[in-house]
Image (cartoon, rainbow, N blue to C red; front, side, top):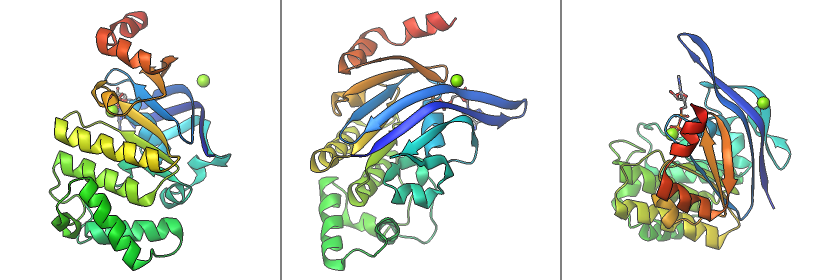
Length: 252
Ligand code: ADP
Ligand code: MG
Ligand code: MG
């Protein structure tokens, strides 16, 4: 049983007008086997939460804590976070010149497990995962993120998740441009890992669409840098019907 605990998290970014507080006291607990959806209007700070957990240097934690089974995540470097069992999709958003998907995955797996995976099972695992995600085998020999389409980036992200077998995955579905086919492939990937393991998921999304495929146990509505309302899956249905208006009116 793994627990990711976020306590009264305050995060700022440096702007030309000085520090601007974006997260204003976030409290959230994600346990093994649970899927939490964070939903909210654009600009409410959802991606900032993901970046903060990932340790993006632009986002400065001014107070509060993030722990994984009591260990201070904010003190860990990026590799340590991955070794501790956190999967943060936005960790590798950049092009990695000259590194193929295949080598990248094996290096990441080796770093996380502390030993290189057995070649025969590894090759088989990669092949199976790629087939599941309906990826062309040639994709493995392409350089990471070089010229990847939105859908390919997403598939690569889910491929990593399937192979690295994290304890808790944080997925920021910033990409509203996913076509229905890519959306389904991504969702099926997440569901496959959820079924095969006890992975906890923090799924961040503006749209309710993906929640038709990935059923959340808990829904949290994010408004102006903190959680404004919490509930079960029915809350996502209500947001689908009503949008975020009632939260924005309260704020105004
Ligand atoms: P969401 O993902 O919910 O759309 P974000 O976390 O991307 O929201 O952004 C929240 C707020 O923080 C927005 O007002 C955005 O402009 C601001 N913000 C985010 N990142 C930065 C940054 N690096 N510099 C300045 N402002 C930022
Ligand atoms: Mg506070
Ligand atoms: Mg965002």
